Length: 211
Ligand code: GRF
Image (cartoon, rainbow, N blue to C red; front, side, top):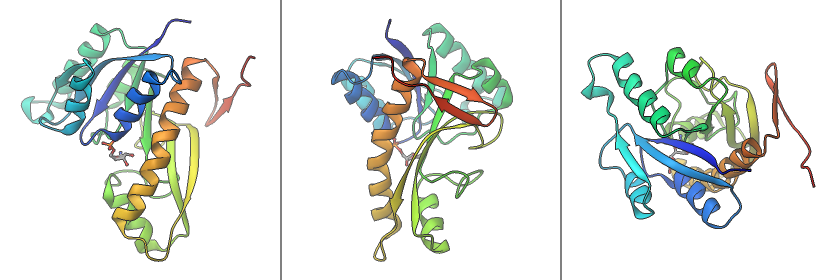
């Protein structure tokens, strides 16, 4: 089975990208990060990629007149790199239906809550954890899902819960959820690489591992 070719979209620190890179280095993940595309310049995710020789590109929405042009450049880059799977790893831009159709069924995203709670427009980064604490829920977590034409609405691949502690701050909660994200995202990519995911309507069924 050839290594799955990944195109990783980022916007910030890149700890989820690092989790993918480390999972490939350890042999857990049979994949290769072909390109890293960032919506922002100067973010640490780009350094993480450069440190291990991955090609990086910065495609900023503000450098393009229309959203279509911005996305067109990303579509060209990802197709040029021949990616099999597009991974949104701390990527904060909402992608248009046109982009989603260009990689139909081949885009996954990691979100730092138990979808359908605390997700959708405006729910990203520390805002999610602030909302979790403000609402007073006792359990939160992380979700990996396929990306469809909605925001955080695609079929769910994996989820894992994280208990909320009484003395939690948005930062302490984010740190514990991030640890879970770093397990969940490589695991979801591994299931995709092994062709063990079957989408049935809104559900994602996981086929047993062939031993
Ligand atoms: C993560 O919590 C991710 O779920 C969210 O943004 C945060 C930053 O992740 N979308 P990273 O360190 O840039 O991977």
